[in-house]
Image (cartoon, rainbow, N blue to C red; front, side, top):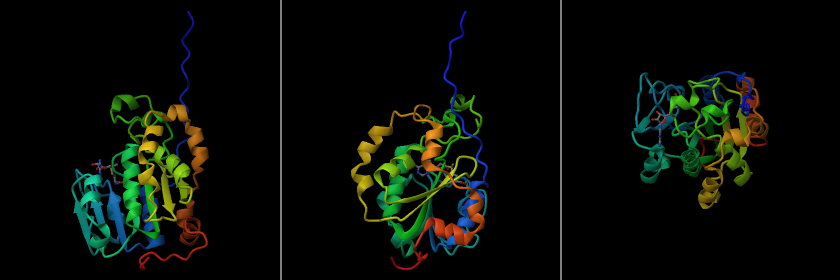
Length: 261
Ligand SMILES: C[S@@+](CC[C@H](N)C(=O)[O-])C[C@H]1O[C@@H](n2cnc3c(N)ncnc32)[C@H](O)[C@@H]1O
């Protein structure tokens, strides 16, 4: 009897760089943001790395550390990010536009798409938005359903990246004006986006079309290698060189975050 052939899963090698927490810590040092916003906080590990005045949003905080260290202010909003952005004005809360935002909330792409559009609207044009989980090495950790059973055979079954990998793919297509620098930060990559434009409405106008286009696409069909080829991750070694990092993120422009836009 012949065995039924099954498609091999296209798995990329483990990310070889430094952990994303170490990258974020160095990013804060290199950019010295005055105002920081984080969506998806959980225990506060990434929030604790920021020393800027901060806004942090999560419907279920599980803080287990001092997230205030080094901060003059930290506003916690225990709600979903959509509800936060509908009701609050981050610019008024912190007295100016956001310099750095880290988006690590619900790992479904339509949520991250909205988080990105909402965050960009309140960001300084010389600021940066950082995305987590958008470079998964194994399609089996990218189901929209977080169920552990679906990840049992993955090379990294403990991680759930969801399908947020679709967001940089969509941004490349619909917002080619954005600068996107991806990094090989374990466990699931880090992407820093600059050249922000608070007045750009493209994502709001094209939101339904983008969601319709990608809702039923799986990474297994799209191709893991194709995603890595598209995003061409840099080595996280760049985070050890603040000047080179700033040059890569803001080519040809002087860093001016913290000032009036
Ligand atoms: C992966 S954890 C965040 C980890 C944290 N950023 C870190 O690196 O230490 C994801 C968090 O997103 C939160 N979350 C889920 N849905 C959300 C939503 N709609 N808006 C904001 N946060 C959400 C969850 O409660 C969870 O705490």
